[in-house]
Length: 194
Image 1 (cartoon, rainbow, N blue to C red):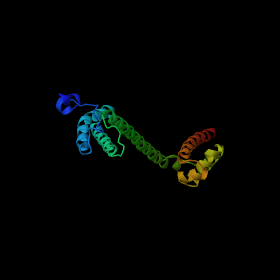
Image 2 (cartoon, rainbow, N blue to C red; image 1 turned 90 degrees about the vertical axis):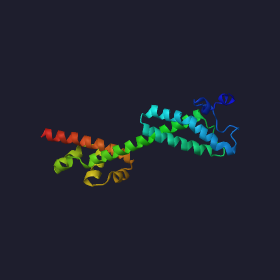
Image 3 (spheres, rainbow, N blue to C red; image 1 turned 120 degrees about the vertical axis):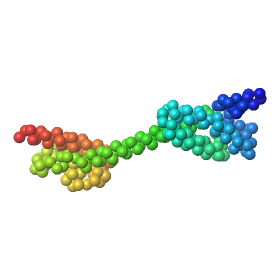
Image 4 (tube, one colour; image 1 turned 45 degrees about the horizontal axis):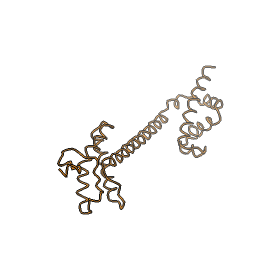
């Protein structure tokens, strides 16, 4: 009965979220056993936390693994935090946010690659009349004329165009997008006005 009051889930069959493996009763020789008991108690809580938020069991397993690796690292520190279920759920929350950030960075990179492919596969390059294109460039705003000239007439890569214009790569890509749109609009008007 004394063990039930202390929250021993092995006797009750229910996990206890109040056990602290860093409590004074956990002697250094007993720390490993205490952490294993904590792991047994906390694993279902952490896994359930991830499954309910990401919906994919394989991802939940990976994130649960990362969370417990972080818990082991924290428990080995000179001044370890109170390792209990509420604390490990906090670690899990951070691991989930880290996962979402990684995922967003990957998607952003994929979008940039897709946008780069769109630039190289621009159907306008093959169908423009050179004289008409030069007249159209003269109608554009100076920054649009400059970025299009550097990119398409001088055939500089976008990174070099950014360097020449003194802009960031992302700002230059955005400027190129707006300049191409302005060029297409002006080029279409020139053809219609004739």
